[in-house]
Amino acid sequence: MGMKTVFTDHSLFGFADVGSILGNKLLKFTLSDVGHVICVSHTCKENTVLRASIDPFNVSVIPNAVISKDFQPKSSDLKTDNKKLKTVTIVVISRLFPNKGADLLTAIIPRICLAKPEVRFLIAGDGPKFLDLEQMREKYFLQERVTLMGAVKHEEVKDVMIQGEIYLHPSLTEAFGTVIVEAASCGLFVVTTKVGGIPEVLPNHMTNFANPEEDSLVDATLKAIDLIQSGKIDTSKFHGQVAKMYSWENIAKRTENVYNSLDLKKLNQPLLTRLRKYYCCGFIAGKLFVLCVVVDIFLFILLEWFYPAEHIDLATKWPKKNKHKKLNGPDDLDIDID
Image 1 (tube, helix red, strand yellow):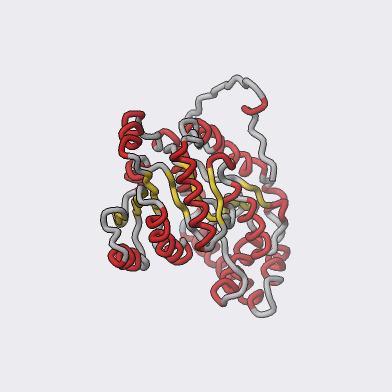
Image 2: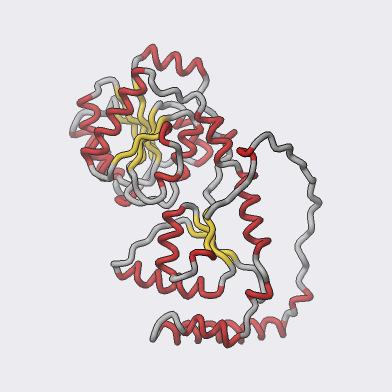
């Protein structure tokens, strides 16, 4: 159709199992003729480039954004009350699946509760591992210290987060990890596994990293508890720092720059050239992909004959307000380094 096309990838996939092999083959077919690709982290970019066999220069890294005003820290009154109780609440908000580290979570909670009697857990989320957490709680008699909330709506996430001091993220694979940005915005110190694109998300003073294994995660969590109890970690400035790092205005501008950089003259290559790209996707798969594209072309011609494109209403051009922002320093410059 001669349109600018940008593909956004925010997932990590492997290369060994059958599902990943088939998925990667389809991804290579899909990205053979797109204008550009956006990935949410540099780790995600490397993964996508390898899976789809595309030019790294055609891939940009633009992270997810967070509406920071929707994730305000808890009030000072609540902080004072919590210190009087001398408790430390660890919050977990996740889909309870194996790849999200639900098995790790089930294993480390009893050990942390045994080492730190003043700690309690607040867990929000649902999934096939929810029953394992319930059984663990009953086995170790932790009903008073481990709260299982089940699934919560996104608009309720902030209300859950502000009840804690530490956010625990035991995921085994993650391309970005928006939830840890939301947690830091709420003023929580983050304990997370060092996997995927997570190390790129937050500065070191906001996080305590662990390997995706039981002993390492227990040690990292206990260290975070000690830091919170000793007052060595000041989370009061986290919200303002996160608001500057992941604003929607900045992310939208960078995404718009990607679309504006595309040259339709270079994208709209001759049909045979484009079919050759699909044909090179595999000895058997390449022929199937070419057949799919040819069928799509005939379908497009048929639809164009029945309902021409000039009869379709164009999208409304909404007026834009030109805002001239004064730059106060180099930190205000929007520079994207791939």
